Figure 1 (tube, rainbow over the protein chains, first blue to last red):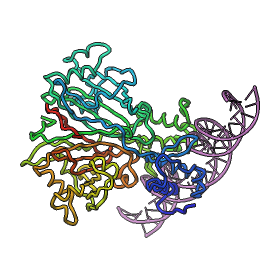
Figure 2: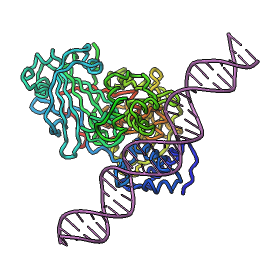
Figure 3: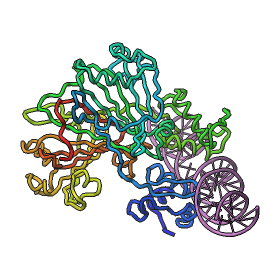
Figure 4: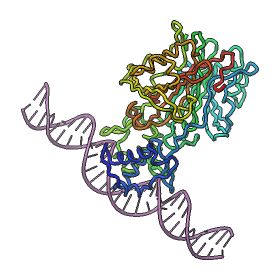
Amino acid sequence: MSEIQRPGALYQQVAAAIREAILSGEFAPDSLLPSEAQLMTRYGVSRPTVRNAIAALRAEGLIDVRHGKGSFVRSSGQPTLTLERSISHTREGKFVMPTGDIWQEAEEPHTYRTRTTKSTGRLLQLGAEEALFGCDRLLIDPSTGTRAMHRTLIPFEVAEAVPLLGEEPCKPAAAVDWVLTQAGHALSWTETVRAHMPLPDERAALQLPDATPVLHVARVAHNAGDRPLFLEELRFGADRAELAYRITADKQPTRRTRA
Amino acid sequence: MSEIQRPGALYQQVAAAIREAILSGEFAPDSLLPSEAQLMTRYGVSRPTVRNAIAALRAEGLIDVRHGKGSFVRSSGQPTLTLERSISHTREGKFVMPTGDIWQEAEEPHTYRTRTTKSTGRLLQLGAEEALFGCDRLLIDPSTGTRAMHRTLIPFEVAEAVPLLGEEPCKPAAAVDWVLTQAGHALSWTETVRAHMPLPDERAALQLPDATPVLHVARVAHNAGDRPLFLEELRFGADRAELAYRITADKQPTRRTRA
DNA sequence: TGACGTCACTTGTCCTTATGAGTGATGACT
DNA sequence: AGTCATCACTCATAAGGACAAGTGACGTCA
């Protein structure tokens, strides 16, 4: 029976005590925490209070709870997968993304037509309700089991200048490839990185544990006049993968985003 | 009284109903949700069930609950601050980060000596328990109120070659500046981006709302021989800011990370 | 030996009841 | 008019009880 008194609510004191024990290494990663009943007697509180404390630690991503088994200290291991987002080398005049080919499709791609939202419209420098081709894919890296959601959005205007896109089912990926290999289109893009908590559909598709944020990268490719060509989005669990960028000063002013 | 039946637990059905109402726009952003008592009669469930549903939505970051006032739909607005992480231009032969000067110090910097951990050692290509200078700062962007935690780590070996570092209190920021302006050190670095849920100290320092992930950027600067010079870490609430990278193909193979 | 039922353990769900505490409006008192 | 006590509303915390459901080990039975 550890007497606790400090900060505020009872359950927060219990949570703080357990958290401290975890961070200090008293409870090793992957080890089993005391059961709810044991924690009740240990701290002299009721079951709702214990469960409240556990819920708090769960929301912090410190522990995993498995029905019928108990609570386990989450192994806070670093992400196993590093996604190199810089252009690393050229091959026969074609630029290659280092990790562009690790992914396999876990499902059939889903292609559709849609319109710009506030957020996608801003990235593509288009107004609201502009027509777009869309393609959603669920990707998986077989070596690590990491899953990712991929989306390609191409404005109608751009798509008209590109072969393969008129066909059904349209294949935006092939079109993107075509754009990248064309001389008329300078190879330059902007990536925007965000993080947010997953909605239930993302949780399910990415098979995310509790309290795991989603990393979200939006890539906008530009042509020589710095006009947006298309948008590629990738989202994945922040517990599985990280992003890496190589940045070099080139002694020349970088092209401005807005002319 | 909406009858609900579908998926699993009662509270999940309630949570799903409310979530749907939010996502469909029935409950507008910043609007007040029905009170717990109203939800109890609306769905014919007890208070713990309602609270359980609300806790789930809170963990998803969909709502904010304010004691004594009620539950509000969180305005899922995009981050207001975009941190440009590319080198945008040169000025009198000195490279400048576009947003390098938006920050103000919210507290006195804290400088100290420490040793490499598993994660920092890997980034700096050092073994375990190597000696480092460290400097932690709490930054704030006055125009948006965004807060960020900044950390600089410099190996002793590197620091010995740099003036200003021997002094007390040492000023790693000035030292980093010195390194960047030296000809002997090529201007090139690698940034690694991750996201995780905040620990209580991060929650407090960054003043984060519920269910808000932390974005974490680690920048490692290299010298001409691709040896790591120092490490800079920046972390901030993913609700306030996003990262932006400008990527350009330079027709030359990029330097490899490992020789 | 193998299959299966049971049991003891775990967490999950749901209810009832009670009290504390923050917020804002109302209204009385000065 | 202005100040402040009160009250009705909100969510927060805590306890207790009951039953459902997942898990694994043990023991029985064919």
